[in-house]
Length: 369
Image (tube, rainbow, N blue to C red):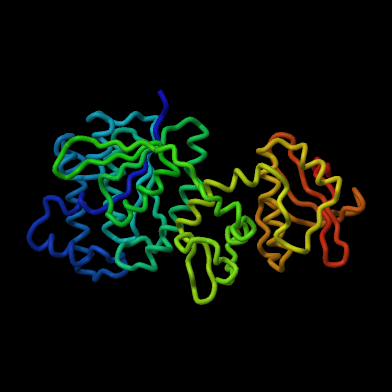
């Protein structure tokens, strides 16, 4: 049986359920406050209540825990009222608010009490639900976290589950859409029911109209965090873009679509350089054509990074690229090298400058030093 990675957004029900009187009013008043926004008196009252709540939940039986915490209700329902297996991994998505952080901490404490592997993911300092622009930034960072984290678990044969029983409606609405890209299933429990609702990932064909393929160079540039003139992007649906003045960047939806479709394009053929300062030699082109699809993908990604670096972004030289000058003259005419891939047979890309143009000479093994 496959191990599971469960992603659970956290709301504040763990704190607000059972609250009444003055403390209920204070929880409502400070729902969107970060820690630095609280007065010393508010913080003292909330700290005392939160520690009391933590103690109550840690000592409660499963029936009470399910009643008091929507997030734990969803988790325990998924596991049929049993403690989750220790090999499973739980990510708790917390808002940047004081209550959001404390709620996630209580849920983490309860799960860790039973030996579960838990990590709180504070996606962004902007992750709150009372500001549209902050929310947009946070959802873009959420997409980046998902792309950096979840595909690796799937490759390791984990089942990915989004538990959307708790959390905030605005965040969960976005996560439900993300589930089509990253989760094997999304699960819910309606407030009026104790039955778990499972929604499997549908076999949706992405980019059915070929929007990315028809605008591939533009998408590649936008994916390098480049802002482009609006006029250059008129053929791309506005839902995939975020406009600032006369320039646009990829929206969170655009990043989702790009992340899921780019491999199809990057693993097929050698893509034209994004920078006019790069030229491919015939030797390099022939070598590339003989590569398997997964290596073609990696090389195309490195060439996009190199384009950005050569276009005056010398500080944008990530470790995965490692563009640098060769010492001495070990393999003329090449004067520079950068990483292609570091696993398996570890290859590097070699090239030299002809005036302002960087010629990619070859793809070969790294030099022994």
